[in-house]
Length: 108
Image (cartoon, rainbow, N blue to C red):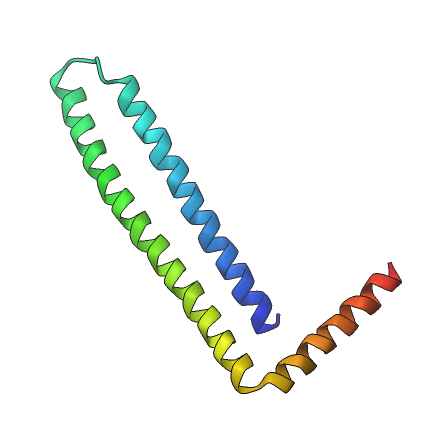
């Protein structure tokens, strides 16, 4: 598997995991709201632990999102720097990609 394909797959997987975690947090928040009126020592203890866990999960999600954003900005900056330092190489690469995509489009 080419390195580019592996990177894209890893990125999509990370984003999918983050979205799944966000869904779990939303569902847990809804569950906490639904059990808000329930009484009892055990329920209160479970709600407190769940609220603490949710707080930790929210913080981790914020951190992961910030890291992903920083990684994307870094990649964009690196690409911009490369294109500015090697404009003709970038033009040749773009032309090559256009040629390949054009040929693939004609075959279908």
